[in-house]
Image: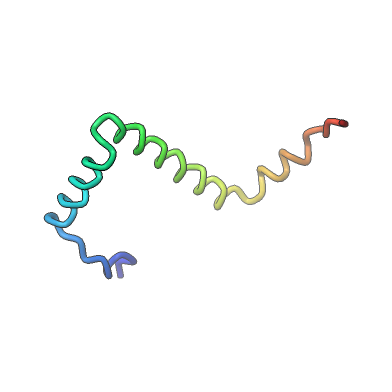
Length: 66
């Protein structure tokens, strides 16, 4: 079962959504927007599947005294 089945988006709906996004952000901003969205998703996936590796790295670093 598809988790997004409740949206029931077809081709016409997707075209309308893409046209609205193009109007809102413009042609020059879309590559930058999609790149930042991809980087964000990558970081989220790393955080979820990281199993605490970042915490271990933070503990290994010596703390700076003020």
